Length: 294
Image 1 (tube, helix red, strand yellow):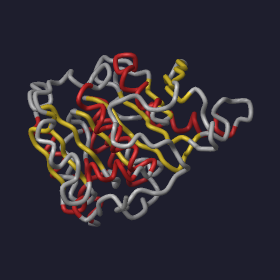
Image 2 (tube, one colour; image 1 turned 90 degrees about the horizontal axis):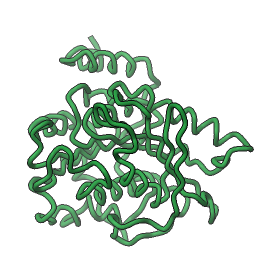
Image 3 (tube, one colour; image 1 turned 90 degrees about the vertical axis):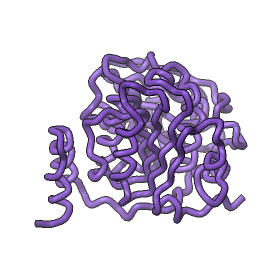
Image 4 (spheres, rainbow, N blue to C red; image 1 turned 30 degrees about the vertical axis):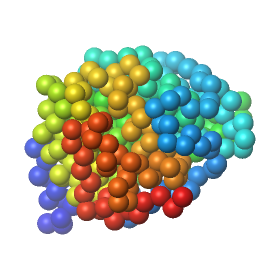
């Protein structure tokens, strides 16, 4: 029996089996990158990833998705990477509006699924389809402004598991599961991943997030446990989670060298930030990624 099938059948949950079957049907993913791909020029923010970025933000709510995006997309000829977002159980995008607006202010187009049950990431992945159509539509504000070559998945709690499940889509380049629920299988995704946990989270215990991290030894994986954070500390504007989430996405989707230096290389910015993290880990594949070239 091929190893990929064995890994799929080893899943302990229904979600693991369903996402595994989808992964087997999907095209073969490319080799895992050890550096971000170049993208169109975006404004630098130095290392101030927690403050608002240089773009004003527009919010567009439709039946299936809420889109957060720069009001003046493509103002300097740039195209904007995509983040698909999954909500926690019972939540809607407005619960995370501050965080999603923040990402849009840094130049991302956020397609947030309007569903309180995001686990299987069906609506999240559909957000890419919608943006593909709008990018090709000469009558759309998104026309020619969407960077469909750089897409990340992110989400909180149930949506954190959904971020992993969405990453089986070959169009997704990286994943950020924030305090992810259990119904996912890290073996099914092949992208760099940044796991975030809360030290005082009594709903998704850090040990559960570490289990995902430990199971991600086939990709570059980083684990950050926010000191003193509970399960709801990442809602609203993202709190202490906001800056590292933004930095990770800016590196992998925008090629931001300042953001690279926060995660990779000896003495990286977050590696030495004991005030922010109660635990910080990088696996062997992440350790192979060089630090900033700046």
